[in-house]
Length: 269
Length: 329
Image 1 (cartoon, helix red, strand yellow):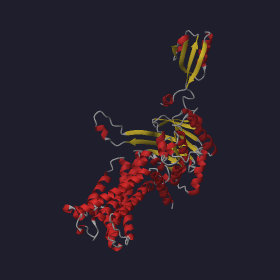
Image 2 (cartoon, chains in turn brown, yellow):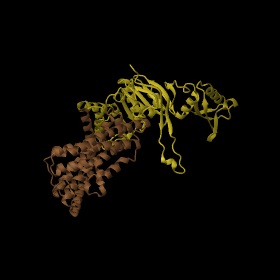
Image 3 (cartoon, rainbow over the protein chains, first blue to last red):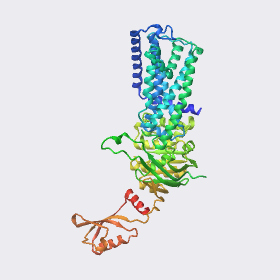
Image 4 (cartoon, rainbow over the protein chains, first blue to last red):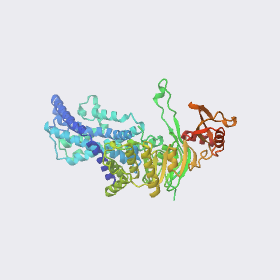
């Protein structure tokens, strides 16, 4: 209960801050509309054959692309929000003030990124909502599976994000994880094109990335209405990623905090 | 009952990582080791105002950050309320309030109240308890009328008072004050000092550890001070007790008229500067026993001269530190 109250306090604070930048909020909406239009036109122009999208019979490429891009934002949020928020709070001096309180550091870091996940979820809803105007057809008969996959996706991505924040805490700049993971995920994770379409078996690299299983599960549940039991391979793979990445992120972050306390650089930038 | 703050042989050395900057021609890398604190030992009695007096870079802020569990010591031990700062993180943070002069540590687009609500929630305060406590501290610090304005619109004095309000929000028994009047004008500084002495220490009995480079502030507020320089404690005691302050010389500047010359035995260590209209400026150090100054004034009267002005020059903080260092070395 105490943890929930603290998380809500972070959400409230970030909401109040966000509301003070009204123009930026409205411009984001305009940006999403233009992006959806762009993906629609690209999909119309490319028109890949139906068999190019395995496991998604009858699903048009536009739907494949839009869902891939929309949910890729969760990875972007996880990778950037922990580290960006941490750095932002360091720059504004509020991190030190928060660290003076008895709230544990992992709670501060995780709660700081909550708002970004809420905003990403809103953005995804807007993406999909606008997509329906361009002919996107969503299936709501496998929502339980969809939400299980979504939660596991956020947790797995958060493990990488917290690790990324650990690098920022220790190195201040030059997080080596962010660029590598986001580029590799975009290329080998099936965001824009199916892995099977990549040359020389490069698609096999996608097996080592959580986004491959996340997007596969989300597309199958949301676009093809695939039931929970048929999505167990994706769910199992995501569970393994969560079990590996989340503790790795938390251990890495704890080590970075310890090192920063030794060097006296916890609140430096 | 353990003392509020206890420090034994505390040392802190900052070790820097090698920077690529040193590879550039014409640049010298920063030293890889900086001693911020060396073998510091002190104890802050319950209900007292204890001063950490020292110039910039003396190690005052490092000491406060070790007590707040933000920095780990390299050697020795520091404890707050009996809890080791390396181990007792949460227990210590509940006991401590930290007030700094850093204006950046708030959310500028939020109001003072919204800022306090957020930080209060990090102290596990919520609902009516938090609302009432905010009203109480805001009222105490005379911020009631401004608390619903965005923090960015606050004056320096208001920002400092809000920082104090945040430090007091969870009603901690121990307050760490890091140069709380640094950015304030003299009147605001006076009000804040009165609040610290009368309200926080006097009525509420809080223990305060005040880091300052302001000698007057230390004199006005602190029952005891530790003088820090280069990370070392040069002396601990009341302001009057500190070595050299009690025994050292005082500097005076006199402007005399109608005085031609002073006897040789009186001239030693004094500087004489002729001014316009036949005035003579005499400056130098005189013993605290008043003997030398009395002889000089007697000589002026004997010569039928006049004392146009006589003023005592307060030593700078650096001079005092130098004298203490001379006395301790």
